[in-house]
Length: 471
Ligand code: SAH
Ligand code: SF4
Ligand code: F3S
Image (cartoon, rainbow, N blue to C red):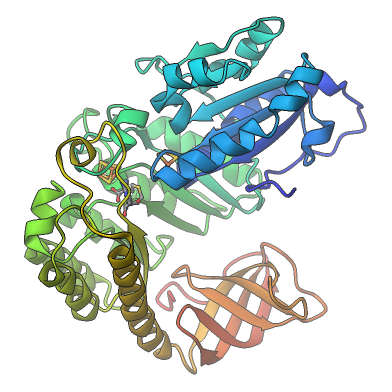
């Protein structure tokens, strides 16, 4: 079994006992990936080692996601597959962390008392202590306080790629989108002070990180409650001054907070990638109102217009939900036409999944047939694919700068990496390819999501093309 997220194992000759070997599965969003890295770092400081085979581990952790029912069920089912081993091997520690742990805490401890640890989203800094405490206990230990300050000083990047790191800028969400469980699982919005974040970025740069992704549930509302004048733009301008970091982007933005100050900073800063993920959820005003998204179609379109005034070539990605309660054919049609009107480069489509505890699950009937959800999902993906394909064609003949990642998944004679607008780029491998290096690829073919071409410059440790040739 291959873990869902391969964090870096740090090579060491030391042989640690089984009780100090940890296996980690990570589900859900980038925030969950970073949280797993932070948990692992805390454990490594206490002598734990990461292993990639659960059979070798004395501690098995699942960092879980609640956003859709399937994600939640998958994590709990996979954890259940360890139940028998736990009966035979009582010293084994099983821990469920993250959003499902936060959301289903009591239900889980009743339903699965053989799970030793249930640790929510704001207390995972206590993980090593909690493991010690759980040893020898026969019931689940719960750590799900939402008011915990969750402070950590991060020393290293344990993400799968040494040249890329996630950096958390805020936690939680103050919005009230009616379908969404995240405010329940992640709590109120709390921003970290800018100097703490920028110090962390500097440390990561010293370690060899070249690209960072700032993370927050509504990352572009960063700075709330920190005092006047502090926003995501403060961080982008701060990163511009940090040697060694060459690229930076941020997820996930909320359309409500695409303020002029932020757009100006994105346009001014040469390190900010030419890419924005701006989930719209629906193109219909009545749907957006029922979802309580706090904007309408024309507000969204205006944000895009303001953005394109300053960054005409920006790559835009989005999320849609189909089959939200009461979605009529006409309302769905509005999502289809929005794809064309905006000209998205890329988009994700999710079928509405009622999450108990949310307003829509508790007060609205999940009345759209699964078949219709599937049809709408398919139709919207098709429209997004068409839009993506035509947007990709403008890259034909262009030179794009790429950070090389490794051999392509489908063909090991080719290499893959990401352009400065986050697009995947593929080229025939040369003898000297190196993960994390910059190369320039001249594009000679495009598909809906990918650019193909030949390497014409690089590899280089630093960027090759001038900043004005951003994508
Ligand atoms: N904070 C981000 C993303 C939150 S979850 C934002 O505000 O955009 C990621 C995506 O999952 C959302 O953009 C939404 O499209 C989808 N999603 C959230 N809740 C859902 C639900 N109950 N059913 C289906 N999709 C959902
Ligand atoms: Fe969920 Fe809405 Fe918050 Fe995003 S902004 S995390 S969709 S409540
Ligand atoms: Fe899932 Fe929690 Fe992220 S619900 S999407 S892991 S914030």
